[in-house]
Length: 72
Image (cartoon, rainbow, N blue to C red; front, side):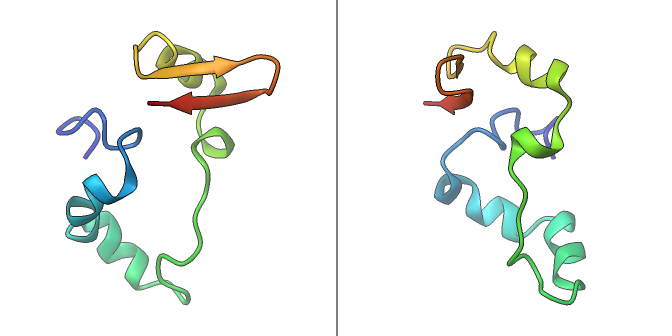
């Protein structure tokens, strides 16, 4: 999914909602006991090296003061 849409994980949620709801990933989540209610944050699941690479994009930056990643 990410290869077909590189901004899938950084775009506003509602802009990508239809694509996410119609994906094989969501079909898998629907089979879970509490389908798609639970979520994880990118910073909790991604490798730090990958997160740092994201900051090379104009739409992602990291605040060292707040220890948070932001997207625009």
